[in-house]
Every structure is written in structure tokens, then in C-alpha cells.
Amino acid sequence: MARSTGTPHIRVPCPLPGCGWAEKHAERTQARPTDTEAATITAVCLHHGPYEATITPTTGAYLDLATLYRNLVKELALSSPRGTLRVMVKGGDWVFGSHLVDEALQAIGLTRAQLPARLFCPQIVTDTGAKLSKSLIREGRAPLPDGAADWMLDTRQWPGSLPEYAHQLLALTETLLADPRHFFRSYSAAEIGRMMAAPAPRSVPAA
Ligand SMILES: [Zn+2]
Image (cartoon, rainbow, N blue to C red; front, side, top):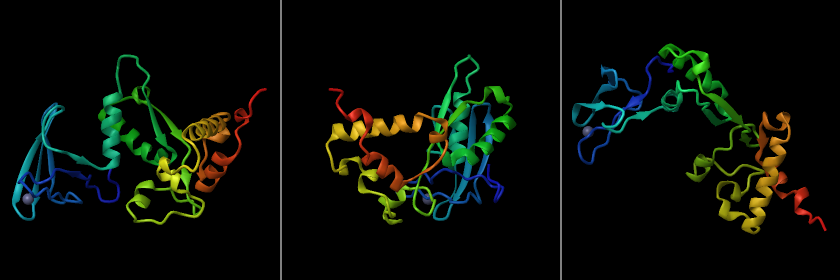
């Protein structure tokens, strides 16, 4: 789960009021199980020294986990033995990460049949092929790339009416779901813009 360093990123913030410091790379963080459903995390605050937190399924301190770990916890919580088919719906950029989650779930003792099914949705990418990161653009850490439009980040910026937006979105979804070749691939933001602007067949009145 942490192949580059071997140190998984588990963080608990310093509990002293107004501090909240947490180690980014977990160099001095230790986790040890205290019983089958609880763990004690110890860490060292640069300002206040050593501290610890006990985490159980229902109580305990805030536990900050890297994305891979959060997904491991989610999928483990969903691996019900009672015959319910659970489906994880993820973006296509998660395909590679899910291999690591699979390995971790199997290391815990789950068999392949117990792993939740996963549905990978089309990824929207920029003109360079990078993921269109809405959070990075909103935080001002990346520019709005060529072909992307304001309404892709904030639907209130859609230039037309709300019913028209809903209608176009539904038509786009039907196009993507119409054929596996349409679904299991990526789309540039510009192409999504073109598809949303295209007149949808069902928008033509029958009479
Ligand atoms: Zn502190």
C-alpha cells in the first residue's frame, strides 16, 4: 500500500487545542492493534512532543488515511459475507490503484469472490491527457485548460436553462452507456463540451 517508501501514510493530528499538527510522511507514527477492533496510534508533535490516539470502529480521534487506505477501509466494510452484491463506482484513473487494494484485501484473508465488484467510469482529461482536476483548478493551482468550460466545474455557470442542462446531460449519459466502446475510454474536456452542445435526438419533438 506504500510501495515507494514502505511507510504507509497514517496520520492523527496533535490533540492539543489550536495545534492539529500531523506528520505528512508518518516518519514517527506507529500503529499497533490493541484488540481485534481497536488500534493505538502514537506520533510526535514537533511543538508538543509524543501523543497517542486510540481508534475503534465507533470512537476515537480523527484518522487521516491516504487515498489507497481509505478505499481499502471502504471496500473492506462492504465485503459482506451475506450474499449482497456490492459495486464500487470509480473513475477510470483508479484502475491501477485498485490492484493494490485487491492485494491488501487478499493479504487480510479475503478471497477474490469476496471482493466488491467495481465499475470504472470514463475519465475526463485535458488536451495533454492529464485528468481534469476540478479541485486543483478551483484552488487556483491549475489553469482552466483549453477546451474546458466554467460549467464543467460549477454547473451554475451553464449558459442555458436548467432543464436544458439536465436534458443534455441525460443524452450524453445515454451515448456513453450505449456501447462498451463508448464507456471504457477517456474523453477530453473539449469533447465533453461538444457532446453537451450537440442537439440530442430526443430533443426534437415527435410531432
Ligand atoms: Zn501539537
